[in-house]
Image (cartoon, rainbow over all chains, first blue to last red; front, side, top):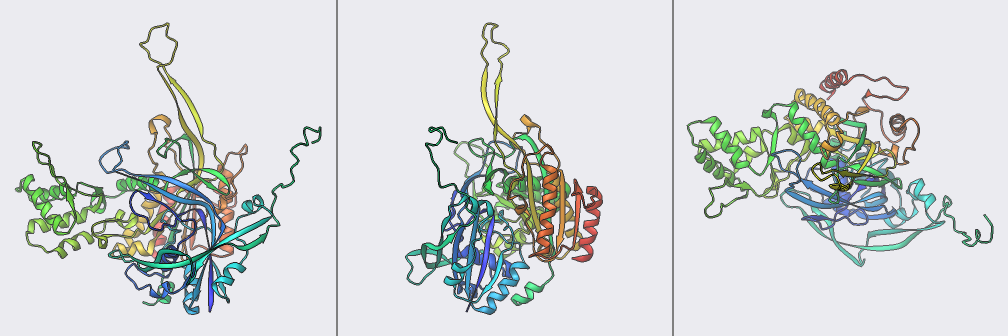
Length: 235
Length: 368
């Protein structure tokens, strides 16, 4: 048994749960379907190819840097003229900006090794939920010998330097992972990415809000503040 | 083909990185009229959305190729096909051509709309959503329509064959029949400024020239929000995939690749052009052909570039080069070949767009 860890980061990412129509929301963290889609792309699986081996992998994600919700006003303008205020289609698309996630996939070691190689030599360009969101930096962090739960909790904090110095001296990281008796039910297990019939079934996961406690040595947050100092004639 | 076969197969990625300063302007706005932004590295950045620049690229691209090789995105597919029918056979009346077009399109299970209201002249039916139809495909449909005999499969095949170059690059989504979808071989990221940005407001007044002398007030006043910024723009094309979409025609693939770079460089989304006259060309273009993976270098600017007397361009270009070196010496392979066009880092050489295009085309032709 082994786990493959991935760093998912970039200026923008968007992980849609159940999104159709005009308001395209994003979840707070990468979805299993989205990440398996990324993995399938790397492996060169086409939309009609079988992905049952990927769906069998266990998935978890740790929120290392939660990012900020970004709303993009997206218009589509039909051919026929210059730039005008007439838009034929308007949608609101949400993204997470400035976020960093640690994702883990546990399962068949041979398959994970292939994915590890593929992530550095993808057959198709990769993206973080939406095509306009190419990932930044190294994606695969390599294989770990343990189970999903341990590997995802044992890995170092992937957040950026600026975020770490801005954060408190004690930081808690949240982990959302596959769990047989988890309380969260979501239609986030892909069975087929085929254009003719996209199919997703249910997955149960659990949310461990304080999964990892980090002693943040890089914190530059000033916690001792004497508000009355200036009144007393001090600094 | 097994997974490992695919992973080890030949591939070539065309990465295009652009540093471009856009002077006070508001080329991409949201519904409140404010310029789009994004937070990165904890700092607010100016942003031009991927979709707006992609559209500008598509439009520019259209001018680089003959109509025959491209597509049109429109509701008016019936009118388009009817025009082709009349082109082929001028003895057919336009009204009849419209009926023939409706028939052949409906056979392909594409939903049409546009019942004319009572008392109004007959409207030509339109598709219910925007449809990307390549010239070749519209000609295929016209031929089928004139032929008279065709099955649903014939129509579907007509819509799949003759993929327009721009369709191959930018993709297509068809709600009624997802089997007609085309996955794009290009990827265009949202463009963000390499530095922190502060939207500014231009408070303007406009005078009513005919108002009496004793009326000192302005006729109209308001504010327009604008910002100026140096943007990092990134796009990649999976050339191996593009080539296969274009039926393995390497000549056309290399032409398309060069045209894509040129369109990416010289196109500009058109928001508020009349106010700000902001058509600018990039300060610097860095092109990289890679055999492993596309590399987005936006991480170079996660720590925003600080204001200095040099402006932002020089530092942006240097940082971009540094990041590329760092990436290629750590987790990624070295590129096959790179080119700098325009401003370049101190240690590199650059060339003109024309020279670079020729070199890039021949390199792709021989190495793909």
